Length: 247
Image (tube, rainbow, N blue to C red):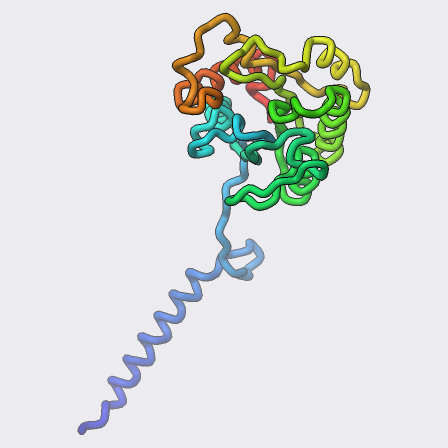
């Protein structure tokens, strides 16, 4: 076996130096002061507002979250959709008084409990509270206090965010107020703690129309067409309230 010549060794060494130099150059960037710092990945600044939807199975849909009326509306408004929905829950339902277990989600939480949890991890520009459908079992006055407390806590958690309260209705019977009548929401509008909260009633716009073809197999939840129809109504309501360009 022949030994490599000195010239060959010198050439190999030079190649190693060149490669090392290229690697170093790729891993550094100039600072403007004749020095170099490690290169870093530059992530574009988020410009679209983030919308946090706290709701029930209606809000989250029984299909992919992206196909829910909440996220469809958010996409049209050029918001980032952050769904936080749990079936069977509400302002009271799913909370301490009647906690239940959901196979794929764990123990249920009320809307206010979700606000407390997400306050440490989420940074929304808009919070949409969409529920009450599962709270019909509770005394109306208790639901009133729970809604007021949840909206108040959401404001304290995210003082700069816009808060939207959606009046609960079912697509099957859009005119049914579920016991939460106009007086109920007129009182909420007068609450000093809820000053600045936007209250909308999108499903009511479908009252008087035949919604049978918009319902899923259970005859209660919206199907794909139903989610699309509610998304239309939700966008219209939010736009009317001047929230379409919320930041």
